[in-house]
Length: 335
Image 1 (cartoon, helix red, strand yellow):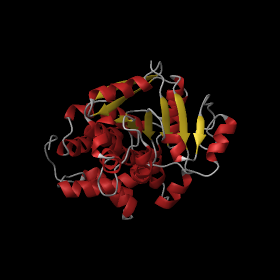
Image 2 (cartoon, one colour):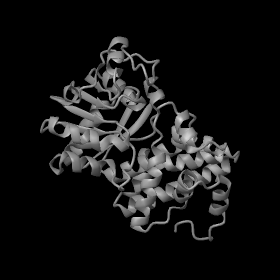
Image 3 (cartoon, rainbow, N blue to C red):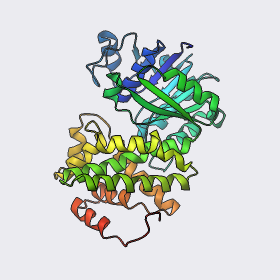
C-alpha cells in the first residue's frame, strides 16, 4: 500500500476514529483542531484529550494551523460538523494541491438544502469534483477506535479516486466498499439522523419493538423518496449508507441522535438536551430543518421529518405527533 500524507480536518469523535484508521495503515496523519490548546494537548498526550480520550493515537500530529495541516498533503479528509464545513472548505481551498484527493465523512445538509458534496464543489471548485470522495456507513466512532469490525462505503464520481480512498482506509477491522452514487450515499448518511431522533422519541415514550421497526422502515421510505427525487440510485438505500447506517443509528445506545429523541421524550427542552451532550454534535437537529425545507422545495411528503421538526422547533408534544402519524389517511405502502 502507498503511504499517504493525510490531513484530518476535525478533531471530534469521528475525526479521531478515522485518523486512527489511517494511522493503522501507517499513513502520515495530521489532525487539525479548531479549539485553542487542543492540538498541544494531543501532541503531549498522544491521544485526543477532549473526545474519545481512552485511545492512544501513536504517530498522530495535531495542529491548530490549517495551512500546516493541509499544505502538501496527498489526502485531505473533511470531518467537521456540517454547519461549519463550508467555512473550513473556503479557508482550505487555496492551500490544496491540484492533485490532492479530497474525502468527506461529514453527514449533514446545509440550511440552504445543499449536501456536503454541493458545498465542497462550490467552495473548492468544479474542477476538483472528480477528486472528491464521500465516506458513509454504520460506524460508531467508539467501536472503530476499539478496532471492532466495521464496513462503510466510499462514493465518488471518479471510480479510480473512489478506489484510492477505499484502499487508503481499508484494513483488517475497517472494510470499505466503493460506489459512484454520491447523492444516495450522502442523503442516506444525513437523513437517517432525523429518523434516529424519531426512534429515540419512541423509545423514550416507552413504545416497543413494533414502533421502532415501523419508524425505521417508513423512515427508509422517506429517505429513498428524497434520494430518488435528487437523482440517487434506489439500490443505494438498501446498502451500508442507507439501511445499514439507519439501523445502527436508530437502535444503538452510542447514537447521539437517538439520545436526543429519548431525552426530549422525558420532557427536556432542546437546549437542555444539547447541553447534556457535552459538546458533541447531533447532526440530526440541524438536518431536520434543512431536510424539511428541501422536501418542501421539491414537493415531497416526509411525515416523520415533519413530526420531528414540529417537536424540535415548534414545541409540539411527542405523543401528539404519534397520534398525527398514526391517524394519517390510509394509502398503499409504495406511495
